[in-house]
Amino acid sequence: MPAEQATMTSPGPLPEAAAARPGVAATRRAAMTRRLLDAPIAPTLLGLAAPNVVAVAAQTAVSMAEAWYVSRLGIDSLAGLALVFPLVTMMQMMSAGAMGGGGASAVARALGAGDTAKAEALLLHIIVIAAGMAALFSVVILGFGRIFFGALGGRGAVLDQALAYSTVIFAGAIAVWVMNMLASAIRGSGNMLIPASVILSVAAVQVALGGALVLGIGPFPQLGIAGAGAAQVIAFGLGGVFLIAYLRSGAAGLTLRLRGVRLQWALFREILRVGLLACISALLTCVTIIVVTGLVARFGAAALAGYGIGARLEFLLIPIVFGIGAALTAMVGTNVGAGNWPRARRVAWTGAAIAGAVVGAIGLTVGLWPDLWIGIYTRDPGVLDAGRTYLRIVGPAYVFFGFGMALYFASQGAGRMQWPLIGGILRLVVAIGGGWLAASTFGLDGLFVAVAIGMALFGTVIAASIALLARLKRRWRDPCCGTVITARRWRAAPRSTEAVP
Image (cartoon, rainbow, N blue to C red; front, side):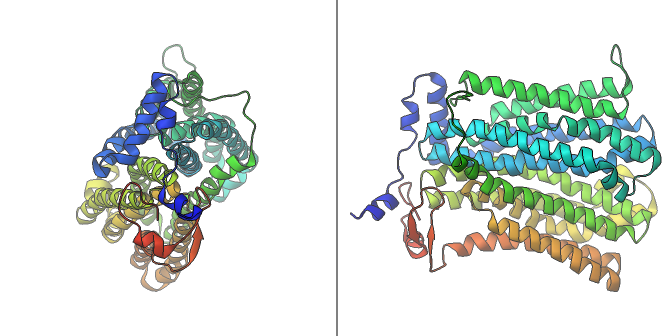
């Protein structure tokens, strides 16, 4: 058998090597990896996703509690919180799902290939990247926050409140980045329970401490809106310290080694080639919503409020998809690392179908009965009318959003983020460029139609790229092991755990 063919038809060293390592934790972690490689796909995905969904639901509850505490301080504080909310959300998306997904993908692929030493070395590189990204956020927001929030319309007391909150949050950005990226790395090993448990604990601390510091309850000082930021930094800092100690102890089956590990560009590249493109994709999502918000603002305050309530639902759908997506990144990455591309593709389509069905059902429900969502926030006739219009037009397109976001996470696991990025760019162009033209001709309805088309295009482009990639009659290089293979061989490969495309 030629060397190339031997490389293609053998999945390489699987996690038995890891199981031979001493300690119950390493054996348990190896069993998790084997589960990702061999267990039935749908039940495994749902079992892995369940803890994540609970954890992100807790984070959503934290956001609602934080807004309630700050609302007790007055309208200026609530408006200041609203100005900072998109940036905090973007940082969470990037640290947990984008750059964090890059780390999870690299760890999963290393474990799938049976290279435990590489997976452990990646942990230190993940912490270094987290520190670097946190420093970038701190420098940009602390240096240019006044300009940015002023451009968004912040003036006087509202701007002061936004700065008071953002200064604390982004001065302590390293706490958020380290905790979220380490939690993602642990998910990459197939362990969803520990990250979910830590996130739930962090949420509980943040809710309790946030109320105490914002309102000055008991022995705690009343810090106002800055107290909400301090609570988040402290809670995430505690979570990060716990995860570092957990990984240092070896209880995860992977040991974080701070000595004897040489930083290598090749390992940074493993993470960054996925994480940077994913960060750009997350940025495009936020920019799309921010710019469309500006276009809607031309139709008046009621239209803006109605759109804001509707668009907030999209932000809340992202954590739901993340619960499934984190499991997808781990399962796809592990199977790609083991060379089992056919199973990796089946995992991707199964997860996308589940996410599309869940998010699509929510979109269809609010599209048919928009007051179920809009009515929670307002009874103003103008706001209700704008919100109903948005959800009736855009709600049915949520199925494409859920489907596409799930495939985005699957692409992270495969280490291929080009097409999700292209899908995000097309969505941005259609929603903003097409929305501007449509709004000029057809008014608010036309703008919302363009938003829905952009969302549908996002999901369709990613799905089409995955479906058609196997049919391309050209040579390409496997990103995991560098083996040159052909699309025709991929398509003809037997559907078994030994098959490689």
